[in-house]
Image 1 (tube, rainbow, N blue to C red):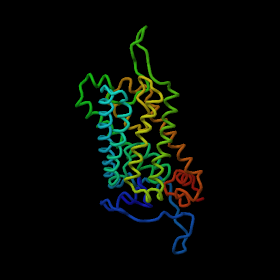
Image 2 (cartoon, one colour; image 1 turned 30 degrees about the horizontal axis):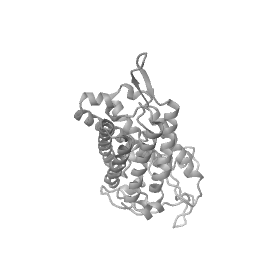
Image 3 (cartoon, rainbow, N blue to C red; image 1 turned 60 degrees about the horizontal axis):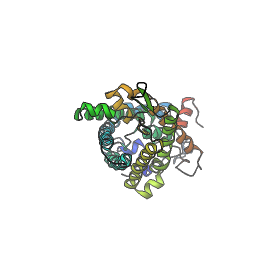
Image 4 (cartoon, rainbow, N blue to C red; image 1 turned 90 degrees about the vertical axis):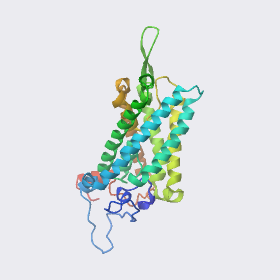
Length: 328
């Protein structure tokens, strides 16, 4: 799908047709707000509410697009957690390798299905980082993240409805875990990964995910050159590799690997509860720090790269400036 400047996870104005209810490409070029317009008049600087995207809360198109995020995330959680359970239950010698390959395929397919509807986020990491960069508004990001979390709960509920209670208890609905309680010589003990290690893995994997794949979607030149099918395939492959690396390097019983998607961890935690809440904050705080680190990176690269000379209107720095009434 072509979008503004061919950004795959494009500007919210490019996902929907310039105020209509039909999904179609809408071509425009972001302009530097500090320059004089075509008529030689001084530009109209965006207010804080415009920078924040408050009108998105009242846009029917945005809420309709969020349905794609909700259903896409529900299908993603159901399918991925099913794969987690089936691969771990099998007798294969390297279940994490099979899991990683299948995860890459599923992620790519679902992104291709949802991109024309909402931009194809299916992950609070993508929505939040896109909002920081300014490709979508923070208001839209909030709507999407809420939809993703609700979708994850629906996906976990659907999985719970089709698996036995034994499998549900043994594999925790395929949810994200840092530690689990296991029998020990002197009674039950917690086994898994140290909190600091798990947090650093989330930060590192999130940054690598954004740097090595989502970056191509945000960069209009690479997105145009490669095409959105190739870009989304790379996104799926990178996520699969990170799942494999995080589960292989640690090799700790009780640690389910890097989440890199807080919504996917949130769904099973709500439905299953129990130990899935132990260290659950790591799967939110880690990706958040990773997103902020990636945003800082985009601000220090050469200004001619990544469309930096234009400044997206929802860029976080622009939002802060508008908050304090600065037009600089």
